[in-house]
Image: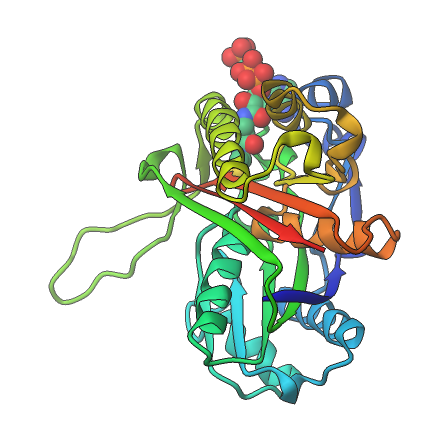
Length: 315
Ligand code: COA
């Protein structure tokens, strides 16, 4: 497949570290050196489906397509206000899109998992145009009393449109199931057969263990996809790493021994927006005119599951 459009949308409310320190025992002096985050976009009076539809429309506009031209829609989302239907149906209803659609919950590597699914549909000859939309509101998942997690996240939506082509050069999907490292447990209603109360939790995360997983798995995933596509690191133009923490990105870069200029980052003003992070970064870099035809982009993302993934895309 081949990428022909990108789009993104962010909540208008941008919350600085200093603002958080007004209601929580934390501050810029702790957050910034450990994460690289100065501020994050946080949902306030918007709805995630509206941001999602905006991101999708921008990607379709860039591709020169209408919603009716899409014949498969993959939506990556961890939570929204509905348990069912999936966010894909809610967004499609807003946009007047009625092709087959699926939702995936692969957390942060969702964009790369979605690209792999899309490529499989293209190779099967089933589709001409696929829309991938990643829309996340992790700030609704974390407890805003838990300074160890809430400071890390931000909300947003990123989208990409693909058509037939041969620009996706390699993908590696990886799973090391270990749910307790990052999870959120929902509250379940009693039934006639289950009487005990099942109380949920907000997002729980073992930060240090996730950090180690992220760095080691990303380096391995990136080396694997480069080897699969016969690339040496100097041939890669851009490393598009999931924006979880600047220290994680720096450790990956140091592990690979690559110059920082090829690692675009927007975490400073965004925080970690889960699966939306890679397509938002992609769209921002694209609209800044950073990519030229033939550039090689390597994506890498990691998160809850634990899942990780990497991919090589030629521009
Ligand atoms: N403000 C002030 N202090 C905080 C804090 C905050 N926001 N969050 C935690 N602390 C405190 C803790 O209470 C603890 O204090 P103690 O030592 O007195 O118990 C201390 O800081 C913990 O520090 P430490 O564990 O050394 O922090 P760290 O350097 O490991 O950084 C993370 C913590 C969460 C930033 C880091 O582990 C991380 O980024 N992990 C990956 C998380 C991630 O990206 N997850 C998503 C992946 S998709």
